[in-house]
Length: 184
Image 1 (cartoon, rainbow, N blue to C red):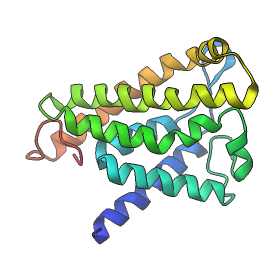
Image 2 (cartoon, helix red, strand yellow):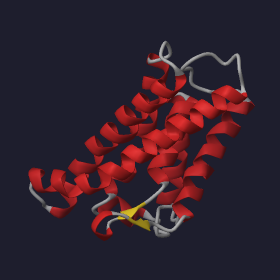
Image 3 (cartoon, rainbow, N blue to C red):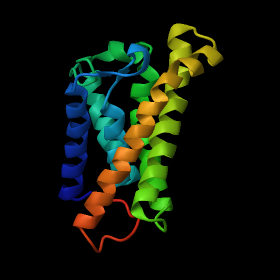
């Protein structure tokens, strides 16, 4: 891997960490809306599957070592045993899936490709990891765990749209990168 790729991986790991420093916003019914899943989506669409996975794996490694990088200043191995463990562990596969989808949708306009990639990877794949984690760590029934996360869907849809706008803006700022390609 070239030096530029390593720098991108480190920068996007730092971006996700920085988004964890933002205070959670109260959303529906007092459920906090965090910004780190926005970082997962941006990392995937901008770095592609391999680098996005590595960036989020680096982020999770730092969290496991005790760095308080998750929303609310959480870090250490204990976070991987709590109710949000599935979501945290899902960051890397969700970013990789987002990157893969962005590349697969390269024929679409960049806004549409980024939106669909963010929805598929940054929402569906992340929830596919988070719901089982919630089920296993809390003992909730599958249906109850699925219903419990529904309150986060509007915020995640908003983050997917925001990601698409950011990526479209970056693509316009760098013409010639092509429609729908990762690494805008």
